[in-house]
Amino acid sequence: MNKKIIYILFITLILQAPLSFASTENPDDYSSGDFQTGTPFRQGVSWDASFALGYRFSGGKSMFTRARTGILIVREPVFLSLGPFFDVHFSENHQFGLQGEFMHLWSGTWAQAGIFKELEGDAGFLASIGWSVFGVEYQNKFSSTTEDNWNLALKIRIPIGVYAFGTQN
Image 1: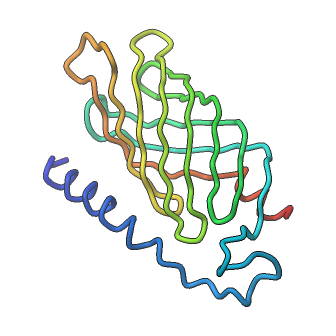
Image 2 (image 1 turned 90 degrees about the horizontal axis):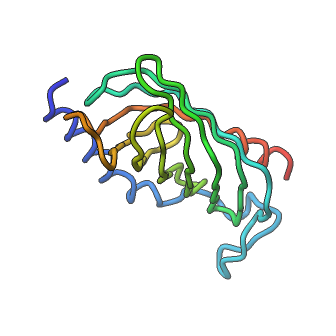
């Protein structure tokens, strides 16, 4: 894929994220919480689980799946989660690591950051941004011996813990 197209997609996603924070929610639709005072509508701590499917289109091209479990901290509209993850890559080393996520429920925007270690290879960091279930992820290896020490990926994520929290509360 042409690098210019990749950069345009990434920049477009970054630029649209702040614009989507404007909420069209009606305060009268909620029985608790207060827009005027900033009182959260729902809050609590719960379990978290997340599943993602992605495709790396730069660096080492491959499909991957990621499963993450952990803790979910809610102060609506903000959801924070932290937990260990495991990646299965269909053509490379599998990875495990620790990932945190910030999500603004009403706008649908989210960001993730984490560290990883390949089962037979290097360690590195990852950062993702997205809207709703779609996102872009950047990965960089700390001390790679190969030239392709970074990757960009498109991914679809399913925030299972957020959905479960929302249906229970």
